[in-house]
Amino acid sequence: MMMNDNYKSTCKPKALKTFLLVACIFLVGFLQNTSMLQDHQSKRYLEEVEKAKEPPRRRQLNILTLGGSVTWGAEIHNREDAYPFRLQSDYGHNVLNLAIRGTGSGYPAQCITSMMLRESKNDDPDEEDVPFDVIMFEFSINGLDGFPLLVERLKERYPDALFVYVDFFSLHNRGAFYSADARKLIKDSGGKDYFFGHTGDATAEFNYREEFDRKNPSDELRQLFAADGHHASSLGHNLMATKLNDIIDRYDLPIDPRLGSWLGGDKCTSWYDNGESSLRIISGGEMKEWDENHHKWAIEIQGEEG
Image (cartoon, rainbow, N blue to C red):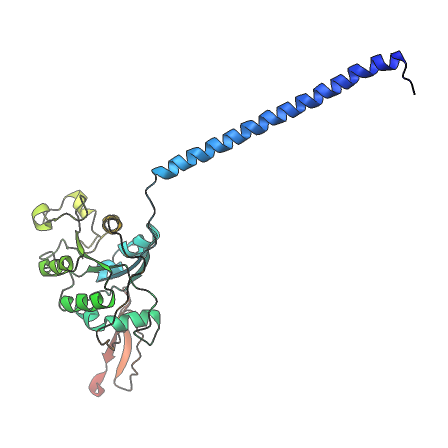
């Protein structure tokens, strides 16, 4: 079929307009996609640059903390502000806090196996899932009797763990028990010491008796202590957590730490913190919460039957 001239003349401009419109739409879409791709690549590049600037993140470490009421978290509004809990919440580590209020190193030295079993609710001392990477001690204001035995037992059980001694002091009385031997023992085992109140290098030597006037403490020092002047404040705990994390960040700890023996184990029971005991009181005594403010328990002996 033949087209007349009038049809041809009206058809060609319309077809050309349609072609140009489609080409224009395609070009705009192409440029938009190219721009979006360049923006995406640029964003990824900037993210990679920023990521490269960040320090490498450590793996989550298993940390055991042992000590007295300071490590337990006494005399602060929220117990979870204590440095063991901050090491977990602020730095992502897995922390088991076995501190006992009003207790020196003598009890865990004799009973560390039972303390671990009580926490894990496991009856077999050789069956344990957590080989600790770091173990921290704080006993300077509670007493250091039996500390060498405690270190020996823990070194036998966790031979690859980093030991850190936290040398705390009080604003009252003589400040703290003599801890030089304990600190030397930790260093001889390949560990480190941190001196409370020191804001400089976390591992540097520091003598609070020379650096601080405990009878007339400065405002800066006073803020590190709770209202009683004997325990750490939330600010003091924050300082400890920061410095202790600085210390463990310096070490390349084994990915798969070994697990040894308990040097014979032990069998202990304690009701001091919660009033719970595996012992059965037959007569003449009663489990009693003698300090209701701080929730401390004891077996009260009654009358002549006791």
